[in-house]
Structure formats: C-alpha cells, structure tokens
Length: 123
Image (tube, rainbow, N blue to C red; front, side):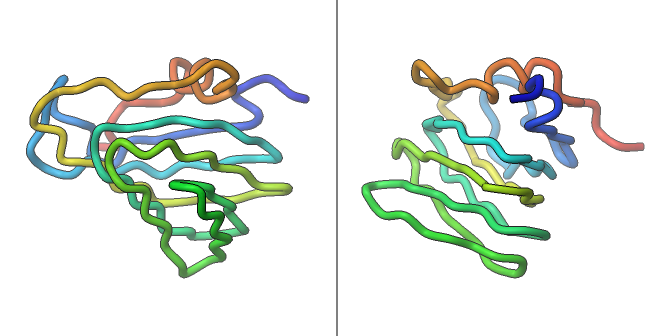
C-alpha cells in the first residue's frame, strides 16, 4: 500500500469558515485503492465526478458512479472505498455547533492524509 498522499487527496474549494460554520463547505477529493471510516456532526454529500465510490452508512451499502450522489446523514458513521479510483465533490455542513468529526481507530489513510492535504483555497 502506498503512502496516504498516494491514496487520498483533497482540495478545499470553499473551506469551513472556522471551527463552526453556517454555510456549506465544499471540497474536491480523490481515493485510489483505499478505504477509510469517519463520522461527521453535519450532513455530507458526495457527488461522484469520475470512477466508482462505495459507501456504507447506517447499515446500507451504496455504489455510486459518475453523475450519482451519496448522502451520509449527520452523526452516522460512513465507510468509503474504491477498488481503483474515484474523484468526488464533497459538500459538508453547515456545522453551527462546531462539533468535531470523529475518525475511529483504523481510519487511516484519512487522518494522516487530511493533515497533508492541500487546504489552501484556490485563487
């Protein structure tokens, strides 16, 4: 398995406005032969731009292809994976309470990759 940066990348198009925010946050992200699990206090929508994304949330597994969307409800643990490649547009939020997201044990590569991801908004 490669390094986290080889498996996951993320670029914020509209980053969260601080620890709590009232407007949606938007990012473009990619997975390459990877799997991870997380839980957010806010709704998460993933619109698949390329490839195939598998998501298990609330005990239901869904496979989304380019042009399809997957919604993970607030407080629900989501497991995301692809056997090859997937590129998505993610819409988070709002998160007015500022509650933190959770990354359960074994959630890598997301935890490490998220720290290394480009979080600089585009010009």
